Structure formats: structure tokens, C-alpha cells
Length: 287
Image 1 (cartoon, rainbow, N blue to C red):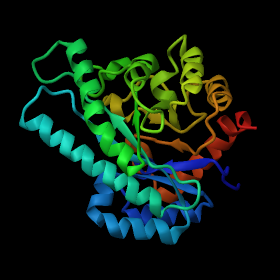
Image 2: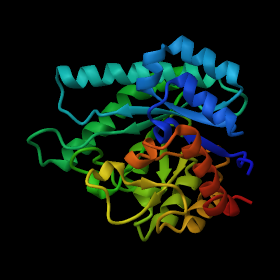
Image 3: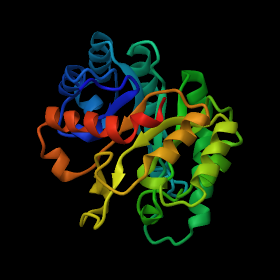
């Protein structure tokens, strides 16, 4: 089975790979795009990673991830802001190395409540402040900061943004080329108004990336590792995918799977299963 031309493999799906190994597996499966994670890029070195991407002929779909800037002002916040500036540089370098159609998109997981805090509103304001501080760097580098709302179960420890409107309201103060949003089926499928929110994101030209994976209960003991191959769970991908297409998003569509059993699968087999799942569950709605 050939891979759909818009399918991209996010390296989280094959976590236990180096940059070189991930690229080899993805190209070997006939897939045209990839998104890498910062840990593996830093392990290989930014310039070496860019060379691997350039030699592969793959498009670069996203860079994962920045964010984690909900803490109050102080040394930890300054370190987080500086780290995000490095992430912006990485994104620009890797996207420039990718094939035509690559996108310089840095996915932002903004962070949960600081230790000892219950102040969601204050944490969200600090997210907005951080985006405002980083936006000039992103604009200068030609990078889009893609705010990713996460499922509400992660509000305390991973993301104080739980809905698309929360992300869109922060992005509204900036050029859409500089600040956009990530639409991820795993995190948003539950929202009864998600289709209207996707339409708004389209009107505002804010959809920077579309990520797909499935939801299945019971969740894993570590709920972070509960993402499944498209078609293996209970998400109806048709409405959200059609909404994203109708909203004008025409870029690569990433499958990002965080799941220990998938990580324990040989990477080439995990990618083959991803291709099959995408073809059955997502691709029919891309025509």
C-alpha cells in the first residue's frame, strides 16, 4: 500500500530512533514528510540533522516542541524563553533544509500550572505574555508558533490551553504567519463545538498544522501514552478532517503516536501500520 502524499510521520510515533533512523524508516515507507523532536535533533546536532533532511528529499512538517512557559517571572522563565528562541532557530534551519512544501512550524505545548499554584487565569496570561515576547523572533526567522490546546485532563500538568478558542484568542493579536494553532484530533474530538472552532481558525488563517491519532478507552496508566493508530479507537475522523480541509488547510497531516506498545514495535512496522490506518480512517476525507 502506497502512502498518502499528505501523510507525515511525527517522530514521536517512532520515538526510539535517531534522526537518521527516522528518516530512513519514513523514506523507506514511501512517505514524503516528517516532523522531528528536539531531543533527537540536539543529539545528532542541528547542522547534521539539517543535512540528513536535505539529503532525504522529505518535506519538514513541524518541529516539536517549544513552550513550557507558564512559570512566573524569574530564572526558570528566562531559561524557558531562551530555550524557545533556540527552538525557533532549529525550526527555521530544518524547514529550510526540507523539500519544497516544507513548513517552519514550531508546535508549542505551553505547560501546566506551576508547582503550588491553582491560578489557571494567571498561567494563561503568562502564556500570552511569552508568545508576545517570542513573536518578534519567530517573525524574523520566518517561523510560525503553533499553539496546541491539549485535552482538559492535561490542564494541570501539561497545558493550561484546553480549547481552540483559548489558543485562537491568544493568537489573535499577531500575524497569522507568526502565531497559529495546532488542531489535534486526540485533544479536541470531545468538544461539541469543535467544528465551529475549526471554521473560525480557518477564517482567521490560523491552522498551522493538523495532527491525527485515535482515542481508545480505558486510557493507559500514564494517560500521556494513550494515543492509538487512526482507526483503532472511537474518533470519527470524517467531520474534523473535512472541517480542516474546508477551512483551507492544505499542508501535511502528521500522525503523532505516544504509546509504549507502539514504541515497542519495530519502527518500520509501526510506520506501516500508520500508513494503513491513515489510508482507511483519514485519507477518504481529503478528496
